[in-house]
Length: 257
Ligand SMILES: [Zn+2]
Image (cartoon, rainbow, N blue to C red; front, side):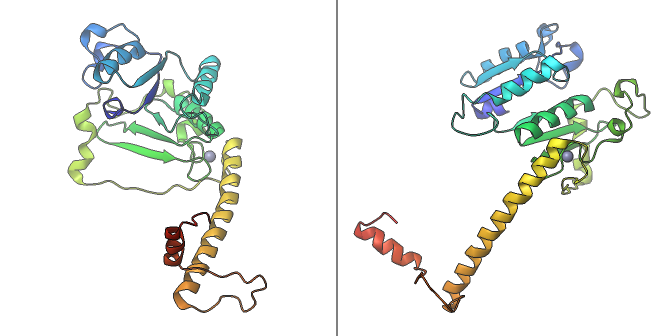
């Protein structure tokens, strides 16, 4: 969908190969069985929109080498050379295990990168989506899933009622019940992830400055509305000028304010 929208540049990470079992849900074709998912994806996506720049990384981001490549590829600022931090606008996590989610969380916290996490419920009739803005909202480690917190190897887990064969149609089943709860998750001041705590501090400091600026603006607006000065003394003779006065000044040609 992003490719059809002309997203600009799309970076894809996957180490899997296409299997017949993927046909019902993903956009691969039977003759692509055995190809890496990244190669098959490039093939199909460049057919859909040849103008989108596709970068593929056939690697596992939970390995040391994979993680290093993942983070350095996100840092590549060839598309946003003047901006600080990460070189991408958004990271979308579409993975099926907690280990990979924790790796994405680690990288995004380090890069101060906004990302979205998504997943299908175990009974495959519902799902979740989470927006993660480092420091501002909870990171994935702020409310650690029980499996991760308990240190159990998730690959060894066998639970009842898990549907391995999810279908795109059944995943939206909760829409039949019209049940879409949303909640706000604030960051955990005791998060186990040290970088998350740093981001939380940065966010709070920036918020103090933002709140102060908003207060000044509000005071100026209330002065304009009432005409009563907020401060009795005005040592520097600072005055507030109506916007319409400024426009008149502009129209006369002395535009530089
Ligand atoms: Zn956290």
